[in-house]
Length: 154
Image 1 (cartoon, helix red, strand yellow):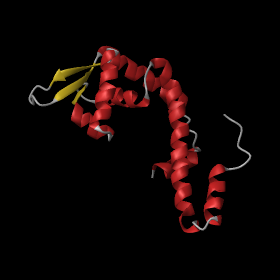
Image 2 (tube, rainbow, N blue to C red; image 1 turned 120 degrees about the vertical axis):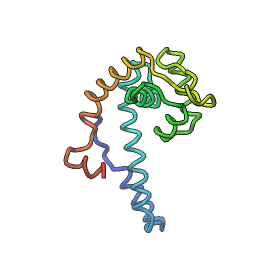
Image 3 (cartoon, helix red, strand yellow; image 1 turned 90 degrees about the vertical axis):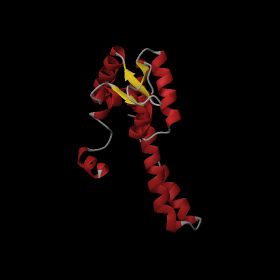
Image 4 (cartoon, rainbow, N blue to C red; image 1 turned 30 degrees about the vertical axis):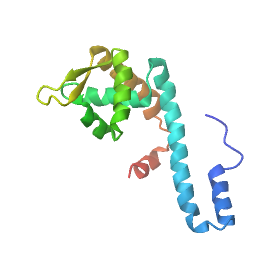
């Protein structure tokens, strides 16, 4: 863990917002900034674990989503909706995962306009291995005190 900063930068920004006449929105600014900074810190931890596997978090999420399906396959549009990302992002992730032999595109059996993205055996094994590593190194200790996790989830 890095040493604590001598000054809380978000508290200082809040003070500056107030001093510059924006006090009525200083709490909102601090909340948004705090969430964004927390996301950056957590993403850095996750990416550090995934990097040796050659994955980004976006590709990991897609592999895991496919692993959790009954058949190991989903239409690309459905994957986009479930991951709440633009279809272009799914296409880019599929391109990279397909090049690595972790997924393959297949025609949809009943909708010729749709393409399925399907997990390969190698992709399934990697989804499991990376999840086990993330569980041990990040998710078991997310950096939030246990007594505050429920509040955060709510």
